Length: 171
Image (cartoon, rainbow, N blue to C red; front, side, top):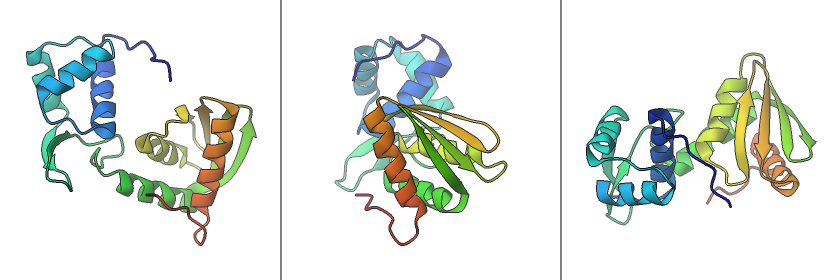
């Protein structure tokens, strides 16, 4: 996967921090600064410290006993509650997803009226590698995938989640 340029704005920096903390176990500000630097985001120790306070970062203990940073994710859940994110996505797919149309590397998802932002946010919170991003309206979500194959995989997964008796294993 190629790296996308990251704007040097506080918002972009904080979303990069949120993404890193969701995907990796980072236990120190030094390690977080190094990872940010690898992604082209230069930040001072003082700014990073302020960002973590503003983002309501806490240290949590993982199942293996390590203490790592965690921040509330887009949907309010902890960034290290990946299984909970999948369970929320499954719930919203079963409740809100009406249909899916595949168009090359994109999916057009239809939801019940007024529910697109909720389902789109749940998709974003799970952070599929295959998904570049989502755009949600009132009852329609555009899911932009990295390739046509990724779109097929994502569509199949979301439609399986929508079926109560055939939900895929979320290990």
